[in-house]
Image: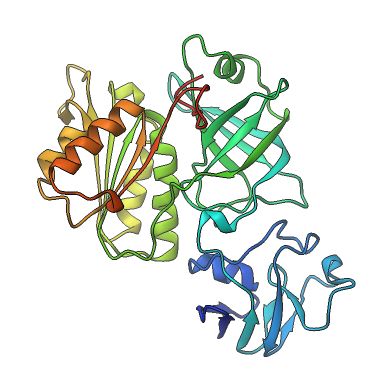
Length: 341
C-alpha cells in the first residue's frame, strides 16, 4: 500500500510505502526535502502537517520538544494516510545550508595507481545534504582548503565518497596516500558548487570527464538512475592509459539499470593492445555527435579539457545554457580540486 504526499507551496507530489519515512520516500523520487541528521535530533526536516495522519515507529523524537502542534519530522514520520505537508522542497544548490562539520575517515581504498577512494563518516547526529555533482572542502590545520567532488548520489549518504588523485609534489595528496589513516578525524565544509544535474530538462544527457572528473559524473548518473530519469545518458571518460581507468565494473552495472546508457573510454596515450577510442576526449564526442544542439552537456576535469570541449561544442552550435562544467583548478583559485594540489 502507498500513500500520496503533496507539498505546499510548490504542489510537488510523491508516494510513500507503508512503513517508509516521508524523507526517504521523497529522496527516492527526486524530491529534495530539507534535512540534517536524519535521526530526529536536529529538526532541520521539520514540516507542518496540514492534512492526514502520521506515526513515529522509532518512538520519542527529541527535535519535536517545544515545537508547535502539527509539526512533523519527515526523517522519522511514516504516513498512515494521504498527507499534505507545509514544506518547501530544495530546488537548487542555493537552497542548501553550507556547514563545517567534523568527519571520520571510515575507509581508504586505492582504486588504481594514483587514485584513492576516501569514505567519510559524519557524526551520528549529522548529515550533509547535497545535490549530485557538488563538492566539499577539506579544511587543513593551517586554514587552507582543498576541494574534492562528491562521488556518491544524495540518496546514498551514509558515507561521503571522494576520489583523490595523487599529484607529484602535492603536499595534501601525498599525505592522503602515505600518512592519512583510517579513523582519522578531519574537518569538511560543504556542500559547495552549482555543477548539478538539471532534472527539469527533457534533453538527452552527455557527460565528458577527464581523470577524476569521473567522480561527480558518477554521482549524477547514480542519482539519475535512482530517481528514474529515462533520458539517454552518454558518458565519455578521457584518461592517458588503461591503468588510469578505475571502477571498471560500474558502467556494466549502469547498462543493466538504465535503458539508454552508453559509455566510451578514450585514451590519449593508448596501450599497444588498446582497441578502443584514442585521442582527446572532446574530439571523440564531436566525432560521434556532430550535432550537439539537442543535448545537455556536463564537463568535469582539467581546465584544458573543459575549455577545449567548450570551444569545440560552441562551434557546433551548442549554447552556453546547455553546457555545465566543473573545471579543476589550482589552490590559488576559489575551486581547488582533487586533480591539483
